[in-house]
Length: 485
Image: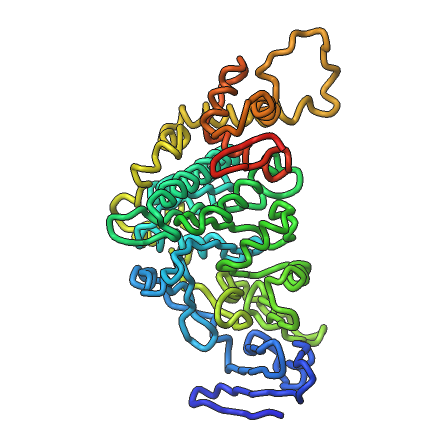
């Protein structure tokens, strides 16, 4: 069954329905062939995942040009949403930064292949966070090249994997501190109110560099992100990842992590072929749903005789950067495009249009009550020398736990062993085993520091205690207390 509607703009809309007991499906190539359409970007297909579909045929690609974003677009509405783009039918695309109905901080996942417009899409959200007074901690793991304009416009700007680890550890410590504070006050949710604690978003750009197989801090980073997903939502600490759309295994190999993130705001830009299969398998896209492929450019393929006179090829066909799908939105199969942001032509330095959108003034800062919990790394975030020393300590800790590299030569077993060479996990387990009863994290820290080994911080102890509980080597017999399993 089908119904056709023709609008004043010569847009044709086909309403399709299959009989009960059947599920609608389609083949894009066959559909274009049946409609005699050579440019598939003129077609938009949406299904309800069951019996019905709407096929919209445009005279030309409706997303070839979109307007520029404004600061007003990025002011949160009463539902905690901003306008970040337009659907193919011209309606605004809303993305939620906060859920005032539940008091929940959000989780964000942004996928896109190289050149799909991931950095510009992220810039929109970062600017919105500054506009709305959200504290942003950002790790740009492309050595700061992805979103350089964010430096100075976010509370914490990192460019290395080591600093990303320190940032995640600090965020977990802040979430735990807020949890204790809110629990004592009888609060069950985060309140975004004037004079209250600010909303915090921790963003990891190029997250696959931190979480892919073989990455040096993969296990620790995965644990910390999972911990933020568990504890941060009810205390106003959100987590967001922007990653290459190659393989979901790059997200730490953690089903739990992927499960938490797919409950948040998930945006998919241009993807790889294998990515689509994984989206359905992992439940990020409902079974039976299909997405129209996004080409790299909008130049239609035209078949010409091999003997026709050579034509001047036009390399200036419009690109599709920023085009994608908001899988967590009300219309997951409706193609959209992010509003244009920044200069159209590359600039030799920081983009003045993007800087103008960020606007003058300082970004929102962490509340004083959580500064101590955020620790030395937060205090050193604007001190290059101090941060370099902290990052070196993270590298040394990682190398120590990894042991001698394969093929690195024999180890001199006669050399004296220092207690500082012991892994922090082993030191903590020894302290718990020797204790007469359950211990709080600060008590564990004091005992670990007394064993003569390398100095550690409370945040590291708390993180490691959480890991030991996850692996079953320790238990939590009471709130904030730990004991050997």
